[in-house]
Length: 238
Image: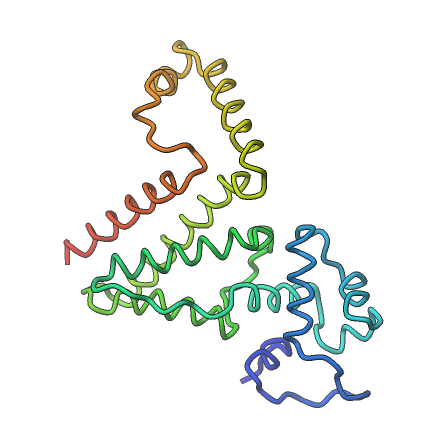
C-alpha cells in the first residue's frame, strides 16, 4: 500500500530511505512546536520558517520531515487531539455525549483546528482512534455500518459548528465575552423589527424562552440533545 510519507512516519511504516544525514528530530517534536505556535498566535502564526527557527534548524531541513504545509497540518492535528478518550456509559447516548464533549474541549483548547482545510478524511492514528471510538459508541444499536458513520458525522459537524459560533466566549476575557453578548443582543433587537422579522423580534422580547446565553455550555448541550434525539428517532424506526 502506497502511503504519503507523513502517514508512513505517523504509523511507523518504513518508507524509502532519504539521502542525507540521519533526522535529528522526531515528528512529534515538530508537531509539538507547531501546536505551540498555533496556540499562541493562531494558524497564521505557523510558517515553515518560524517553525524551523523554533526548533533550531533551517527551513530547508524541515522538509526532510514534512513535504508540504498540508502534511504539517496533519501532524499538528494528530498531536493536538491525541488519542480518543475512553468512553463510559451504559448506552449509546451517554457514550456519544462523552465523545462529543471531549471533541468540543479539544477544539476549544486548540481553536486553530477549525481553520485547517479539510482535504480528505482522517487517516492518522489518533484521528482514526476518534472515529473508532465514536463508531464503538453505537455497538449495541441496530444501526447499520453506514448509519453509524452518518450519526458520528452528524455529531462531529454539530460540535464543530457550535464551537465555531461560540468561540469568542473562550478566546476573550469573561468581561469581553459578556460585552459582546450584550452588544449582539442590542443590535439584534434594533435590526430585527416586528415588520420584517416578527419571530426573531418576539423571541427577543421573551429572553426566558431563549434558554442559556448563546455562547455557554447550556446552548451547546441543548443543541447536542436535539441531535441525539434525531439519532434516537432513527434507531426507534429499526
